[in-house]
Length: 314
View 1 (cartoon, rainbow, N blue to C red):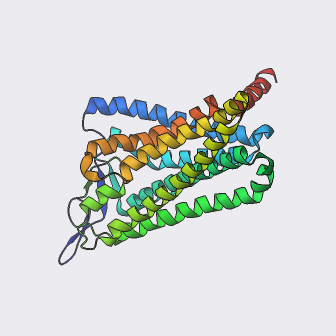
View 2: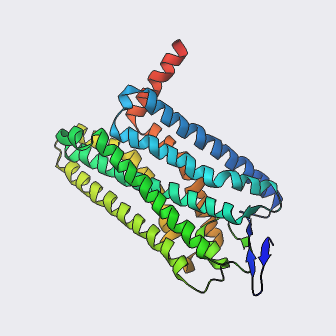
View 3: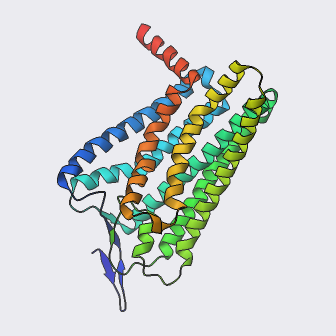
């Protein structure tokens, strides 16, 4: 154990991440699968960012937010995946006390930014469908930048709450974290702190953010649904649904998993189930987002075809 002794306690100065499995064959298989997923995640999201930047027809608020969602996906996955890959190759995967805090804070930051961006994108769709004539005045560049500042500020504040409470936890016993990254719940289980406040505050801040952003999304899509049902044109309805389908898919996948992890009582699922769901929202969903938006969005498919056409025939 990496530890620092004193008169009464042994303070842990590092942790051992136990990872997903101890089976050596399964480790090799998972290493290859997750490495491929990570490479697709980085290349797919980078391609989305570049495509939006170079395609003038995608210079709209919706795609401005989508490019930042792609950036958050890269950051979110990179916070966890490289260390997880190392875990598959070594018998012991140590992480320092401060390194654990850095990983905890970065996952909280990018996860929170993604929550806010999904809510902002829902509001953007609400304005576009329910008040199309006012869209250009309501979603100006200044407003979009202000929304973005709120998203990143919210991410910073939530990550800070995790980091501060982490440093208020005292670890004096086992240092083996039963997870593939420094998630807060398994760290709290290892803590021997007498106060429950450091354990409760991050759950409260994260839960508040989830509830607020879900509320914005539900209200936005309630108004969108009412507006679509009032449309007389089938073509108009189809177009409105198609512009929302990719975002709704991304919202359902992301919030479905984080609700299971952070909002459901811990007694109803095991640590192994927690790990599987965590892999889905930290590794798989960041890969799926660019695929969802590219396959189900005609503007992005059209822009991609034009760029590829220019590259091939240049």
